[in-house]
Length: 262
Ligand SMILES: [Zn+2]
Image 1 (cartoon, helix red, strand yellow):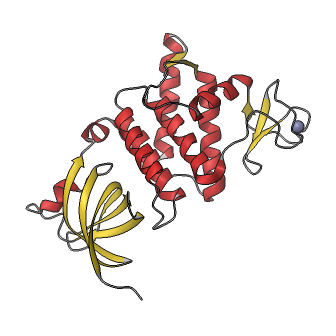
Image 2 (image 1 turned 180 degrees about the vertical axis):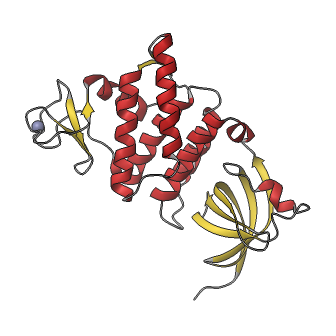
Image 3 (image 1 turned 90 degrees about the vertical axis):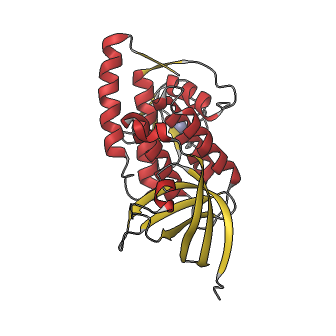
């Protein structure tokens, strides 16, 4: 039986959208309660106190009331607005990608403090480091935490150590060596393996600075997007814009040095 209850929780706003009657519907990722949706009555009215707090990516402390499934936000205060992420189109795109990734991969009501902190760290890091590499590292780390850790050191089919360019199989969750590959697969070169290792082991407290070849970066991005699409059964909505950004960025960088600084 669903009991009406009230509680206060710390949460990240994964998504905010308009709802009927000047309300807003928000998807929260709560540190204590995991992902759930709640309605903020009247949040679109000009004088609403809630409205100003309920911005995508912001972390808030919210008072929640109601029964599971029909909960409302009755009060909230901002812990960190992450306004920079909404003011810059590149940062906004990558932040939206990471929010959508968590929203799609984590089931309702499954709290995960480690993932919560990782998402906060990514939001903090995006404006200060190369956002493309930050999003790629966070994206792969989140995918691994969701249970889809990619195999990139040995062939998933024969177990042979990968000593030359391989292919990546989304349904087998890793690399297929040159000898086992029966069908064309997205290329996973040796530099991709080295970069994947760096990204998955990146220490967010003291991230190393590294240069990344644009071709390798693009390989790991495209494989991440395909891998997500394979597991979700649909592409992420935030991707169409990111792919455009990536294409224009690659062209910019190619005309400069060909390298991306991490
Ligand atoms: Zn093999």
